[in-house]
Image (tube, rainbow, N blue to C red; front, side, top):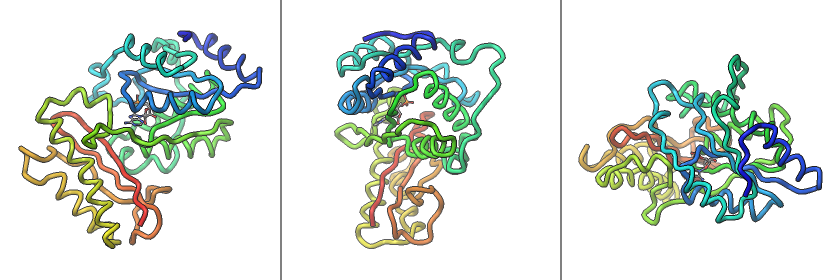
Length: 285
Ligand code: AMP
């Protein structure tokens, strides 16, 4: 497995493969890898001739008060994991390789970035769209693999690729969960034992939302009330500490719906202690 650190090395690696008629899958990550990340890499290894992962904790998608400095960095274990699943190369750039002095161009994210995460983290998707488009140029892969765990991010990237005619196929991959339902996340390492238990309320609320819809509930507000109740039940000792949103929206536009008729998605963002967690579940009525 090759380690690439300059944009020239990265471009050449991908371009040589593409020129030889090979498909190349790109798996962008911020490191601190878990089975969720590795499942994207495995899917790419299965579908593409070559797979390139990237490890870069992108500063521009963190707001000043967020956890950039604290974000876990586990490079040796990450490289070992990627090697074990058959990744061909890993791009691990320093920050100034991506953002050299004088860098000032950014991507204005699409409309689907405005609500939900976009409302609570107003600069987040501009940072995400900008780094992802840069990676698509530095590593001109044929396919790129993203997790449904970050459902709105997947929608933002699909819309950007469509709107800006980026020649790459976006592949969405299912959320990998712990055996008790907690969606895997690099931020789960921040949770102590009690918080880890309370964090299960996110996946529980999503399951309750799906159950209500499958039982015939079609009113999104009623489903949202069930989600809030599940997240908070038992008070601060048992539930989450605060909710940013717990909502059911159209699965494609992420716009509010009057009735749950077509595929919808339930999305949750909540804090447990000082850790902000997100999760979601597609719901087919
Ligand atoms: P991150 O390192 O958090 O930026 O995530 C890198 C990629 O891994 C993104 O496409 C995420 O959606 C994806 N990802 C993160 N957690 C999971 C998970 N539990 N299951 C599947 N994909 C995930």
